[in-house]
Length: 156
Length: 103
Image (cartoon, rainbow over all chains, first blue to last red):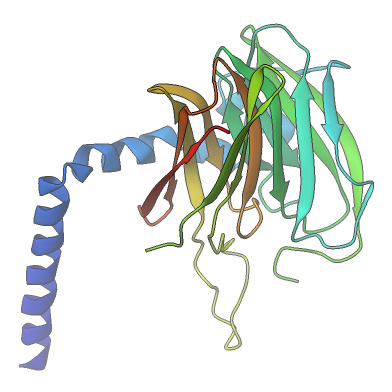
């Protein structure tokens, strides 16, 4: 008796929300965001797999990519990073933390006119190499740096 | 509904430097609550910044981005008085859009 009433309530509520979303035109964009997020890349555990999931292969180490961060992070929950690239035709820049449960932390698409320079903060579970991965002119390049963490930021 | 973002957009030389502070839990899906049950992941997945209808930055984020994320970037072609619009979408499909005027 009670369960059927619940079902009716749930069903009614769901339909109303759906109707509202469609009326507001949210439905199409709602589908779009899911497609924009590269789940395969965010599930990877190594640099090689992450590059593969982004449609590339064998990244080359480059001195034109600069990672600016503290050498020792006291709080792994908030580690500031600035990554910049001097490579011509930089298309995207990603930040990867080697020893996190999943290696890819963030990926930025850099359109023409935007400086290949981003600054953000990420979590680090433990002391790890941090990799900046840059896609320039269709090819992948990377630079890495070790950051020591004294207090982890992933669960801990 | 999430709290509004704090956005600053200012000229830095011939470029516009944008700084954004978002308000979001950024739950990783790795943590456990006091009963040992995993707290489900909940984080911002996509961030888009537009200026005069042109996308100046788009980002895909994983759960490793810090709680209450900070983001800063620079783009060319802006001038004081222009609007910069930032939108994020999280893993539950929630959205938030805020704008700032370049100073």
